[in-house]
Length: 237
Image (cartoon, rainbow, N blue to C red; front, side, top):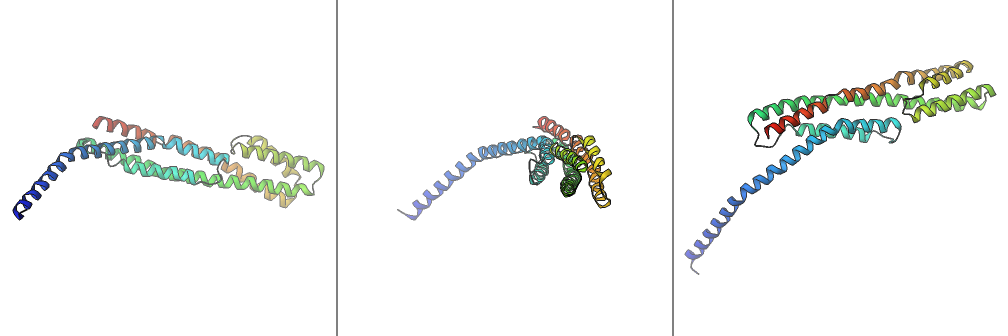
C-alpha cells in the first residue's frame, strides 16, 4: 500500500473520530448538566433536613443514647459543606437568577456557621450537668457508708431523684430532686454540704441551658432560607 493511500485512510479515520466526538458532545454536556442538577437538588434537600437531624443528635446526646458528640458535630459539618456547595448552581440559569441564588446562599451559609456556637454552648452545658450528676451519686454513695438510718433514707431519695433526672435527659423531675438535695444538705456535715451544694448549683444553672440551646436551633432560619433558595432555583431553572 502506498504512503499516499495510507495517509488518506488515516485522515479519513481521524475525520470520522472527530465527527463522532462532536456528535456525542451535546449528549455528554446534557448528562453532565443533569448530574449537576441532581447533585444540587440533593444538597438542597440535605440542608432543608439539617435542623431536624441536628436536633435529633442533640436529643440522643442529652438522653445518653450515645456516649460521644461525633454524630452531632458531623451533622453540622455536613450542613456547612452542602450549604457552601449551593453557591454553585447548574448552568442554564439566567444571570439574574444566579445572582439571587448567590445572595441567598451567602445568608444561608452565615446562618449555618452560626449554629456552631449553639452546638458548642449545648455541649458545654451538657458536660456540666453530666459531671454534676455523676459527682452527686459518688458523694451520696460515700456519705451513705457511715450515715444514720434517717440520713440514709434521705440519701436514697437523692440517689433515686438524681437517676430519674438523668434518665429524662436532665429535663424532668427537677423540683423533686431539689427537695431531695435540700433534705441531705440539712443533715450533712460542712464538707459534704459544700460539695453537694456545688453540684446542685451546676445542675440548676446548666440544665435549662440544654433546652435553651435546642430552642435556638429551632429558631434558626436555616430551614427558612433553604426553602426560599429552593423557590429561587425552581423559578430560574
